Structure formats: structure tokens, C-alpha cells
Length: 93
Image 1 (tube, one colour):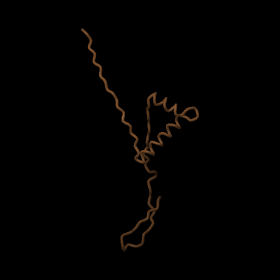
Image 2 (spheres, one colour):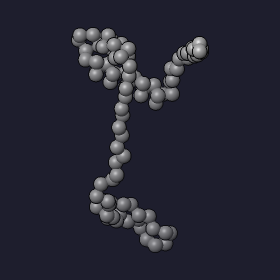
Image 3 (cartoon, one colour):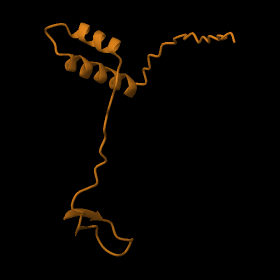
């Protein structure tokens, strides 16, 4: 049960507090966050962590920083130029 403040139409009387039934539990949208990173990134995280801090703490710290920057609209994108190459070989017959 929940309390609701009801304001009637003009001339119908004073505002009243009414009890209304509420659904058992509001639906909660579940979120799953998964990640995969390369061996190189894993090495970098472990190097940042060192021996005194766990790699998990480093990941949580980096995610917190990223979320804070996202909420403040402070995006730090970096352009990377990737070279695409194609090799064509012919096999003599």
C-alpha cells in the first residue's frame, strides 16, 4: 500500500490523502557488463597494478574514471591510423 495525495476538481472539496495498492515489486532491468581484452591490455593492467594493488582494483578505478568522464561529457578520443595492406601472390602453373 502507498499513500497518494489527491487534489479534487475545484468545488469538490479539500485535497485528500488516499491509500492505493502498489504492485508487489517494481520491475528491475538487469544489466550485464562483459568484457574481453587482449593479452597486451592484460599485461598493461597488471603492470599498472604492480604487487601492492590487485588488477581488479585497477580495472574498477579505470571504469569509475570513464563513467565520471562520460557523465561530465568529457570524452577523450584518440585517432589511430591503421594501415591496411593486401598481398597478392600468383602460383605458377
